[in-house]
Length: 305
Image (cartoon, rainbow, N blue to C red; front, side, top):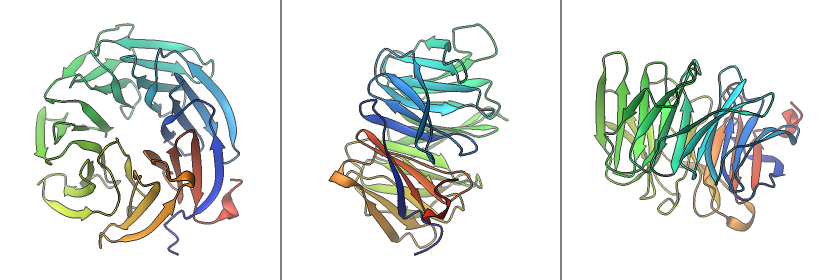
């Protein structure tokens, strides 16, 4: 077994928040956040299976969340059309942004965690300034013609995926937008860790690796099932493997260069594995299916880390 694949299940955590809609590592990988269908956001130490805090402030299912760069805040979004910023220590909701006309699918901080970006079924990305008391967005990006399903932010770029079959990249340095028409509804899109390529899942059982600047397709990854649900993809921390959830209860791993399935892991009960998050520096993967999250590592030796 390759040592860049976390093939050993070390923990199964019952989150007790209904269906787990998303799981996300924080910036340094010491903690993770889960989003629940019971309106809650929870902060965990997944290595020790410890629930640290529960955050309440949404009126309906929570679909996505992210920790700020200094771990002092969590932003989250959901089916109540709102974006909430929580203070990690106190558990209080310090900002609640309303303005989207429908469910908010995805939310991200910028690199300095001064700005929150949110993507919605209303086809817009709204940009909120956390440094002010202003409750209106400072900018609205409305180029998508269907639901915005996925967001990624780098130091000078915004990457979005939409159900209109396009990925859009906004270059903030020169104010330009680049559009690549992929064809099918985009389920998940993200930058590779080196920032040179874009990895995009579409709802026709396909993941495509594309050159960020030219739009050229470099590789295509197939074998998993993704045509009904929003399914996360990721790269491992070394940028050597592509990993994705699947509607057949497995997590799939492909070699980045050869595009062959090199491993797949079955989840109990064969439930849809829709959300996953890779540790930023270690060979450790968290996956979500039904009401649980699963901790996978390359070896159980570091389980207590």
